[in-house]
Image (cartoon, rainbow, N blue to C red; front, side):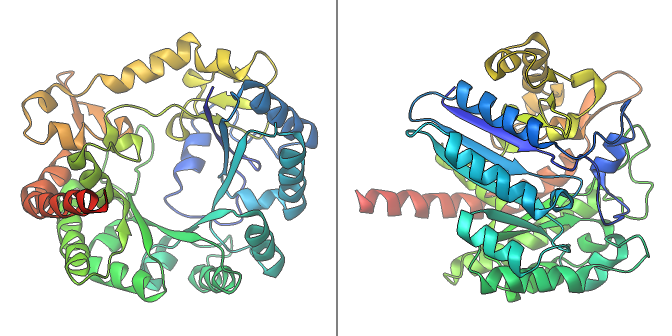
Length: 378
């Protein structure tokens, strides 16, 4: 395997916050074992051995840590993991480390570690204090914005590469200008806005935080205006969804499976070593097995893994007649649902159509400008 991408949950679904919309807590509660505990030293070493046995010469292994809240596993876990990774890896293999965190447990020691080891850090910040504290609170019911802001300042101080991940709740959707401009004012140049998920198996749009398609479409259109205006001024800030659409127009392909038209295969490694094909489907039906039962290559080529990837290629039928099919590519299958007649739809199809109806001419303008710039660089 030339590239091995591992999304590791060293603390399983454990978290020090009680975010009202947490998709992973909901996911964990929809499987037979909600929490698989902290990853042991023995399991982390097995993971490293299996990864380095599977990677090809001159290949790359990417270790991405997520949760729950991964920092609950403690800094010593990460220090030992990275030290062992560098000791055990073949000489011609490259390593990448990243982590998605709520930031509230970070301190000087954590920030210095991320700086030393070259971690890319994703920091969960829902746009602005009011929206963030409305849903991202601790067990005592207190908002976490101020603590996350301190984490951001620590990472800035230590020159750690870090990006902002903003969950678009109903509250965030009402204030796209505030969310975008506030994150910009904090110094973030790479932003990711992801739609808030409703609980598994429940009617969509019924929660206080729920993001309905109409609101999401309006949010995306206004966000695009702000983003495009910055591009015109030469003050470019990356918004991942818009970047992906531009790259699709250029023929480069997208950076996320949600926009590239197929599921990108990676392995989710739970705290006990259980393996799954996608973070949105860490559920009993998609469990691939456990580390050590067979080589990673065989997990990747298993019938369950193949069925998962094949499922992602079967788009809602309405996509075939959509003028934006080759740009949107049907979106993430986690947003697909089946109606009473048995037809499959993307819940946010109307939002993406609204955005592309509104912004596609300007997206094409950016793509042409980028293409011309590439030609001049040759």
